[in-house]
Structures are given as C-alpha cells and as structure tokens.
Image 1 (cartoon, one colour):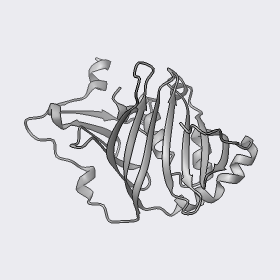
Image 2 (cartoon, helix red, strand yellow):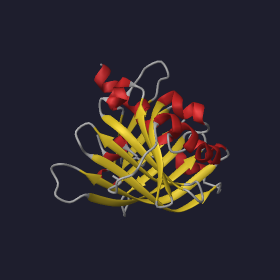
Image 3 (tube, rainbow, N blue to C red):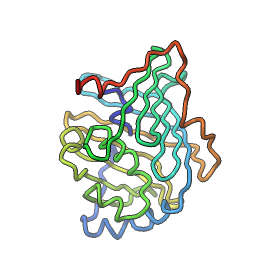
Image 4 (cartoon, one colour):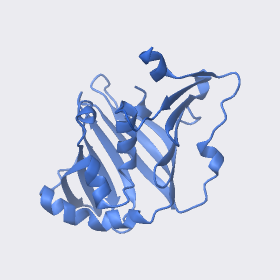
Length: 225
C-alpha cells in the first residue's frame, strides 16, 4: 500500500497514566473537537522503515470537513492525492496520470474502512465515538503536549497496525501530530503546522475531476472477479 493507505515516535520517555485515568485525561481534548466544522493544516510526513538508514520526510497538506471528509495531498509538487467522499475513496497519482477508486460498503469490512477509521480518530466527535473503535491504552502530558496511545478494536486493523498515538497541544487542544506504528516495526508520523479551524473549504476539492488522459481503475472490483 502507498503511504496514504496507512495515512495518517516520541523519542522521549513519556510517563503515561493507566487506561482508566486516560479516559478522564482526554475528555477536555475530545470536547474541543466536538464543534469542529473544518480544519486545514500543512504537515510533514515521516516514514521509518527497517530497510532504510534514514527516515523519509515528505511535505503535504490536509483538508478535513466534519464528520469524515478528507483530502490529503502528499509531496511538493503533489505526488499523491487521497480523497474520501461520500462512500468511496479516490486516489490520484498526477506524475503517473493514474487514479484508483475504492467503494466503501457498510456491509463489508475492508482495509479501507479500517484506514479511514484511523484517519478520523484525530477528530472524534465525542469519547463514545472514539472508544467504539479504539481502546485507550494510555495518556499523559509531556512538554505541553498530551499524548494518547490508542489500539484498534478491529482484529483486521490490528493485524497491520499495532497502535496509534495522537499528540495534542495542551493550550489550544488542537491536533499536533499522529503516528501509526505497524506490525512490521515501521512507523508513519504526520506533524501538523499552520492549522486553520472552521474556515471555508472549496467543495470542489473533495470532488476532483479526473483528466481524460488519466487511467482510472477500480482495483477492489477487479480482485473480486
């Protein structure tokens, strides 16, 4: 899978509270997200792999509209665009003039549903919503940041991702970083800057046109045949 499909390490030792205390600690941060209508930010994505001596760092931009619409742009110039709209995910690769469409079925578990659940975890509407999808393993404050460690409840998600960490600013309660830790020992971290809350986002960003010279495929349908 490309990095976005995984999409979305604190090197210091963080003294984390027990899971029971964690639920109390994170309540103010979840309350701060409850009224969020939209959010945009720049980010730097860092991938660490056992096969690489140095991490891979790539800039990008994220657009989010509540409750679950996303657009990720990775690279400068943009190498990959990932859009979640309605009941599908659209991946666009401008350098390759290629696009892929993945339908999201509520009646069928898929890696895409698990991936989207992980992406949406940074913007939970309430604690009940978060805990319906994740076990809150621990939480704690360090250097004016709140660190929350989550584990997916779905066994299918845990097979490829062990846990996720969310990092919030303790003053603004806004999301500062997400980190996915995978079963193979690799990690994928996004550090956000220049955030803007509740700004107007052009609707066409979530309904991009596919140029006529692009090859559009639906890989999931092809596998089922």
